[in-house]
Amino acid sequence: QNMKTKIMNRAQSGASMIETLMVFPLMLFVGLGVVHLGLVYQAKSNLEYAALMAARVGSVTGISQNAMLTEVARRMSPSQIGSVAPSPANFSIQVLNPTVAMFQACGVQPLNVADCVVANICEIPNFGLQFRPGIAQCDGASIQDANILRIKVTYNFDSKVPLMNIRVFGTDHDSNKTPGVSISAIATVRMQTPARYTSIFN
Image (cartoon, rainbow, N blue to C red; front, side, top):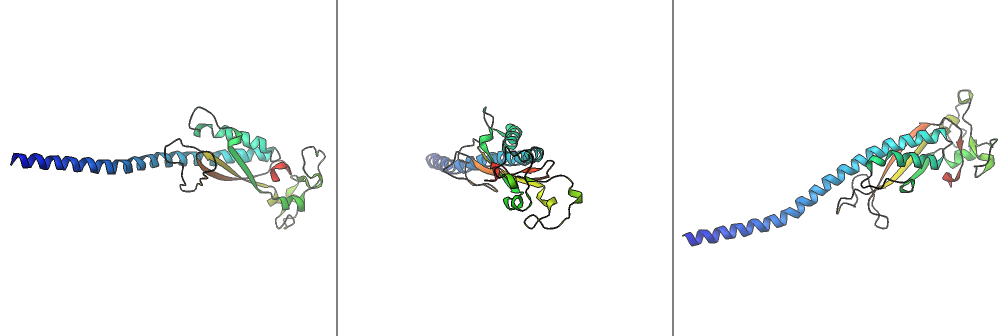
């Protein structure tokens, strides 16, 4: 009887070990996934705020790409995993509004055309908007709508969590890029200075 009990105990012990070996990798993967999603969610929230601050900087600098990139990199420093702070090169900014067609329809030539790509459509006027007719004269939009800045900021965020640089909710992964997931945020503000047609629109 004792021999049978010992054999049964050994069999149960072996079965428990096999079950543990089978379940542990799954539990580890789930745990890593929870940590990764938490870091991505935090980075996404920070990026939304950073995008808003970058848009505000763009609204007072004539949509300066360098100024916006510098601002968003500074605002995203708390989300960086590791000792190296993010640089403007880690981000990309796409101007969704005003569009090139809006510049072609409503753009004028300013006094200073040094930073203009096309002088005669370089600037969308920003003054006296309350006296301008609210009609669709800027490629189907009013001059007031053309003075709204909307940008999309994209950031390749690396959580440093093993096995987790894959597609997750609201993110994209490209195996040809550096490790991480691509997160983005859109911000909208009203221009405080005339919008400038610069290289950011090319």
